[in-house]
Length: 84
Ligand SMILES: [Zn+2]
Image (cartoon, rainbow, N blue to C red; front, side, top):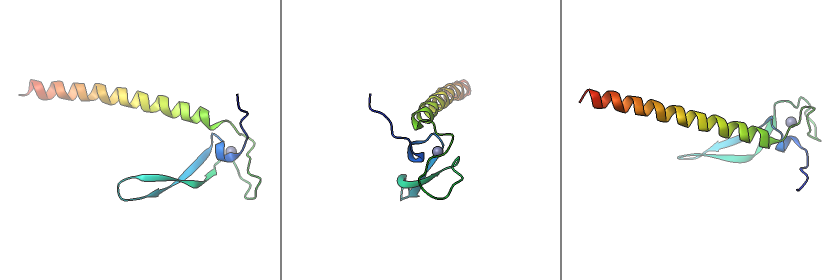
């Protein structure tokens, strides 16, 4: 397994900047760690945790949201069908 080099750029608390184009947002190479109160580099906060943890949490949250949306759409479809 490759050893991960710690930096706030791969920190759980790193927030990426995005740029808005015509129909979508694009992730830029810039951002900030909201746990890093120091303004100068080297950039590594005291609370560093792998960004992979946040990625997993986000995927679980999106999965739950999609399941909830699916259930709600099924309920709405039933209501509409009953009223036909
Ligand atoms: Zn950090």
